[in-house]
Amino acid sequence: MAAMGESPRSGLSSPEAKLGMRVEDLWDVMEPQLSPTEKLNACFESILVSAFPPASSNIVEIRSDASLAEAVQILAEHKILSAPVVDVDAPKDANWMDRYVGIVEFAGIVVWILHQSEPPSPRSPLSPASGTALAAATNGLNPDLGCLGPESAATTPGNFFEALTSSDLYKNTKVRDISGSFRWAPFLALQKSNSFLTMLLLLSKYKLKSLPVVDLGEGKIDNIITQSAVIHMLAECAGLQWFESWGTKKLLELGLPMMTSDRVIKVYEDEPVLQAFKLMRKKRIGGIPVVESGGSRAVGNISLRDVQFLLTAPEIYHDYRSITAKNFLTAVRSYLENHQEVSPILSGMITCKRDNTVKELILLLDSEKIHRIYVVDDDGNLEGVITLRDIISRLVHEPRGYFGDFFDGVLPLPQNSRV
Image (cartoon, rainbow, N blue to C red; front, top):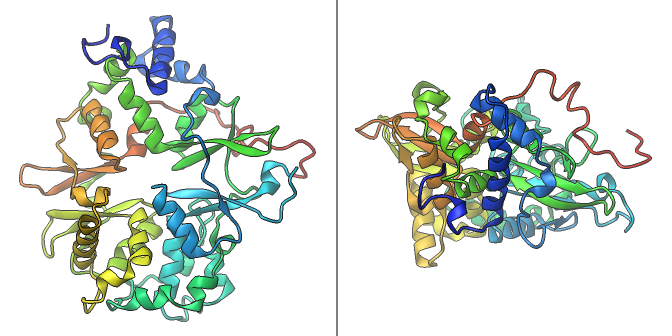
């Protein structure tokens, strides 16, 4: 039975809690010989994606003719990492594959910025204004990472981004120029009849941070499910039997952290801030710890979404000779405090110990609205990092042959599709 005072049964009525109750009902009737992991797999395979609570009343979409500046503002205002791009030239009755041109996300914007800061070289023969440079700024599903030079990111003076954001190049770059796509489709999508298990595996093992759910009849996106939304659902299920049987396990019991201290990608506080964003892009990670010079103690965290502060508030750096990771954190925190804005970057380093439980991590990640938590020892030295994806990956496992040949059946094709 669920613990007293914790269970959604005892008064909580959020859509996520009700969803947890559906899992609980299925859990109760599962064959007793099944292991807890097999039970959870079977439960999530029995629930359709259509049951997942909507992200909001309106899906945030960005027009393909919007400027890069407008896209940054929209992503920042709605506190989202990415948004689907609507083709303004598509007919009203277009199917979803023709209606959208791709996804615009902060990861693509980072690549665009890096190309403006790095001079052309024999290894990276791209001029800042070249169409190739713009096309390189794609999302994580279709990256051309080789076009980023192997050298460290360039040092940028304090006025660099003021000059960049006032340039014609910045004003004239359109969202369609930097939106990424998924092979033959604008993005990898689910349809309402797909299962929770499919969704959870794509968000964990297959490293997708968000999944649009398309309405084939309307040719539009009906919902967008993110890793953060799944973690929030799990937090709302605290107290239920199926959650407690898994969530009360300590990190070590579940093989967490998966990434240990010797493998954690980090940036030192005196390195250029663009080095942090370059490492995130090349390593396909969403955040990076800032470590004190010559030591191993983390003093802050920079995530992909923080690139917005280079473009929306470029004036806050002009007193610095160069924008280092430390200067960036100092300037952004001061800016947010002065404007009384809330952001995870103000929280500093959110950490845990190896003897914490998964439940404790989920509740902390959900309450702080962050995507990763750092494992430290008693002296504050980094021992590893745990991401939302790591936690979801420990909830379910992929049955042999589950996706068939290259996600067969996952991409919902419109009728009369030429693909």
